[in-house]
Image (cartoon, rainbow, N blue to C red; front, side, top):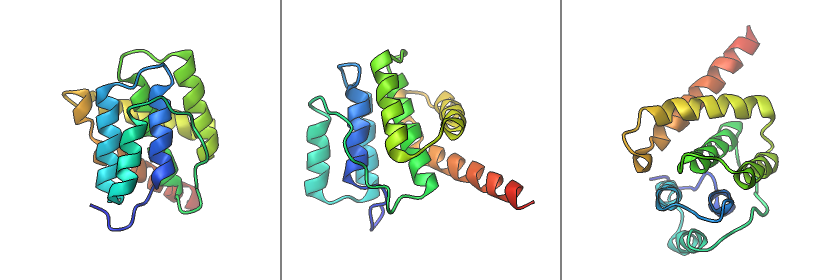
Length: 154
């Protein structure tokens, strides 16, 4: 468990909003949001607020990107993308919410497509949606970013 939250409260509220975009937040998505928030080490009041957001429809609001790295932003986008696909279909409302989140996170189209590819690869190795390997997803995104940085350096 992290001693300093990396992503912050508004990220988890945005994840809940993406999950609610089709009118229903699945239990698997709610569990994943809560599990990720708890793993970040957020305080109990914040976790309670996030839990409440998983119980009622939300909209994407402000996301404080100031302390978020490119890796953090891609990870949040990839988790949100996975959440939209949990029920086997991505609605127009979910796609719009995901695009709104990507804009709020300042994640351009090409990195989003690559993050989606990595997310699908990681998801394919899970035996159930609630067992999605969030740590593995984060690790793969970090590895790919490092490869891209190394390639740019020559």
